[in-house]
Structure formats: C-alpha cells, structure tokens
Amino acid sequence: MEQQDQERVVSFFRFEDLRVYGKATDYASWLGMQLSTAKSESEKTLAASACHSAYDIALNIAEGSSRNKTQFDHYLKIAKTVIRECVVYTEVARNMGLFSDEQREQSREYLMELTRMIGALIISLQRNAERRQMHTDSDGDSEADPYANDEMSY
Image (cartoon, rainbow, N blue to C red):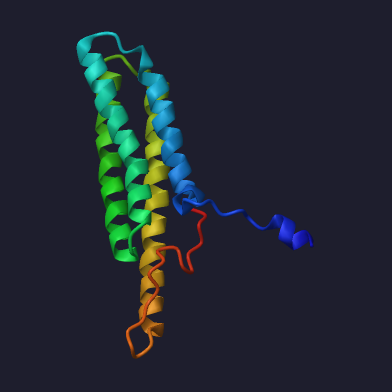
C-alpha cells in the first residue's frame, strides 16, 4: 500500500512531468519579472525579445514531446539554440543596465542548468532509441511513444 502512495501521478500533458520543462517555465517567469522594469523603447524591445526566447525554450520542449524520439531530439536541439539566444540577451541586458551582475549570474545559472538538463535528455533519448533498435522485431515494429522507457526526471 505504501508503494502505491509513493507512485507519481502522471499529467495529461506528459511534457509537464519533465523537470526540464518546469525549469524552462521557471526561467521564463523569472526573466519576465526581472525585465519588467524596462522603461525606454529599446529596453522594452530587448525585454520582449528576451522573454519571447525564454518562452520558446519551454515551447520547444512541449512541442517536441508530442513527436517521435527523432523529432523530439530535433526540438530539444532547437531549445538549446534558443538558450544561446538568451545568453546574448542576458549580456545585452547587463550592458544596458537592466541586469545587475547578480541578475546576470542568476540568468546564466538558469541557462547552464537548462543546457545540461536538455543535453542529458537528448542522450537518454538517443540511448533508448539505440536499445529499441536492437530489440525491434523483424516486422520493424517500434514504439511511437516518445516517453516509452524514459525516466522523466530531466
């Protein structure tokens, strides 16, 4: 009975169970709050662009999760590209005075952690795809579920 109590409830939208998705939405929320002080038109433009990129990290994770593993891998790589955009926005925000040195470091820490988490998820998907390919029966049947046999702790 105790083991059943410890079982995790799975969300209807399974990407919501991915820790990396939660971290991406946390970063987008954090960034929006940090840049809410933008006053000039150039500051507001930077803030809007940076927030859009931050949202895109989570959006790519969500979109890719509904695809097969190869496509999910592709969307995760796009998310990593968007993270690099956010690194640039972080530096520009610091140079414009929108970020303190501490805020710059916090942003970079979020982005480095997201990069590591996405990288680990990509490796996990690739390993599982290799294992599945080794175990595919002669008819070529394979699993369509991008989460099958994956640990969703990323």
